[in-house]
Length: 243
Image (cartoon, rainbow, N blue to C red; front, side, top):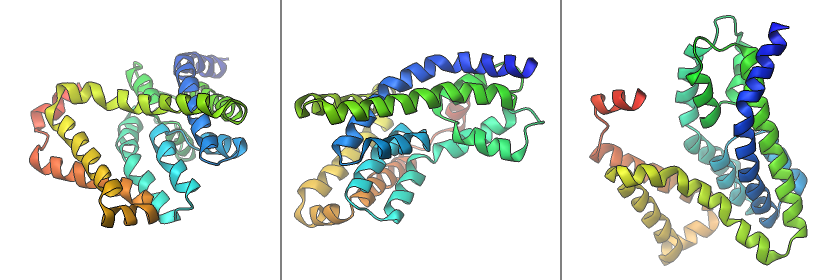
């Protein structure tokens, strides 16, 4: 009974996350179908991934026939933060959680799930975490298939307008930080400028048309590396952020 109770507690704690994911993944489903993927392909992507930014970056690469190297490197860079989050979460998990359970838990370690689990008093058991990740996974998958089916049925003018929703979600992630932290704002502007250069400068545009996935990698790595050197995070600032 305690196992069922812990699982249900986790499921209920994750329910608000799942509801939020449903609306975001609805937009992803529309975008995926609009890029040429089938509803089933869009659903499979969401069922095997829980990374909105990673999926958003992956769809254009897949749709344009990009290489596996482009796809893998893009995902590695975009989702590298999860490695650090998983290290922190591993210290929070109950000592009884086995290695293969940790692999399953790593699959569901998104930003929001991480925040809820880390905010829970005491250690976190596998049963609770499985319940916690199930709600968001269901919401993400359900929203994707609903959006994909809607994208196949709705007029183009409506689906095009709904595509904006997922970009609005990504903008909402970095704008609050950029408003209060000048280096972050400058880093974003630099990445945008590099991306524009790859679109409008003739010799770079040719590269972009052939290796679009690598453009994302270049923009992210170059801008972040430059500002990591120019504005390194001080130890005191890092401690404040952790608290």
